[in-house]
Image (cartoon, rainbow, N blue to C red):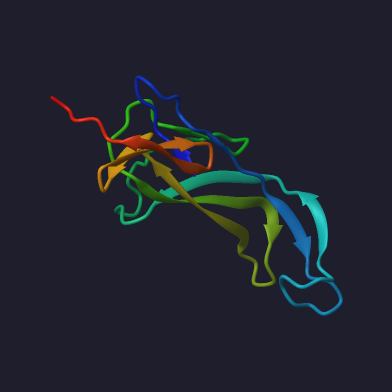
Amino acid sequence: MAAFGDQTYKRGYQQFDAVGYQRGPDDKLHTADDVELGPVDVTWSMEVFYATPGSSSDFVGKVSPTGFFEPAATSPKNNFDVWVIATAKSEKDKNGRPVVGKAYMVVTVPTYTFQGRRYVRDLDRWVDDGPAKEEK
């Protein structure tokens, strides 16, 4: 999870890493015999769910060449579901295609009100901040 900021709350950033694994002797994914190979040299990108393919995602934020996600400085006052995509620079699968990994991330507002209570983002969770104050 990452979050836009406002006058009261700072933006919530997120760091991504790409780590390679070998399937191990059983040749099956995600089993106990898989071997961690370490960091993989990747190119980072992101896609916003429900956005037109190829459209800009700058209104949500940017992911750096090192995998550091920085939310946009101005909040669009909405939550966004995002794929953060790591494409290996030199590794190919057995069909010759680049190896790609995706991570799901929600970029959210710093506070929201639900059923008369105000909730505030605190790192990767929401904290009940008490009854919502009436806006005049």
